[in-house]
Length: 301
Image 1 (cartoon, rainbow, N blue to C red):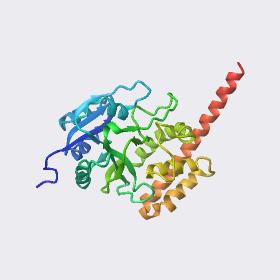
Image 2: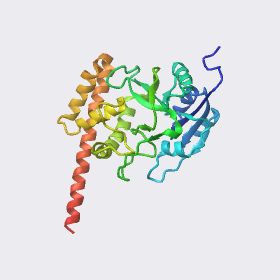
Image 3: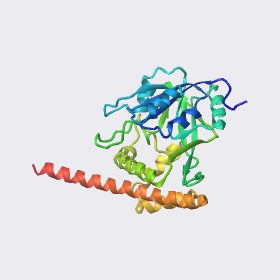
């Protein structure tokens, strides 16, 4: 009997996309065990819609108005979900048969409201097992009425897109962890890593002040005593004003998080993460300088 031949699970899956024709087919095949799959698109032009419809997914178009909510929160709030439990999967992620079995068991629970999933990153033709990138916990499976992504307000001119990327789910309930990892194929080559992290660094630079001033009702806490995601947010807050941030980030990932155990791909990833930190720092300084120039020009009028 095939591992996926049993009855479909009473589960809804949300897949946010835009021009994901290269990834979507394998993603949807990996979640085909769910009774409902909803692909929320943003006017794709590369065959994404045809792939989604061929897989039997329901396609919903999202048009962003430039403010809140962004795509995932909008979908959680407005789509009439068939099931109580929703699983959020990006197009470059895959649910393995082992994780499927855990999900089937998890959604039968009545004493838990959500589950963190552990992502394993594929990088330079191999899995990253250290570097602070594994384990990588994200709250992706939860009762949809109880979870929403945090809302981090940044300037409208920052091209962060219509989809939540670095924001995390805030759950009004109890969460636990599933052990089988989800596969993540976000960086098929160095060029893709650089292109994505150039965009991410713009978001990080714009959002850093919002993340580190204080936590609000719509923003994740930064605390050393919380979830792994909250502890990571606290470490980022702690490192904000430290000198030599790019070098410290390299040492954190390569030495403290044992990136050296991943060999050459660990070395490369940690070097790229140090470059990423430098980009964030330079963009923060650039924004501060531009803000100072703008303020000066206003006072001169």
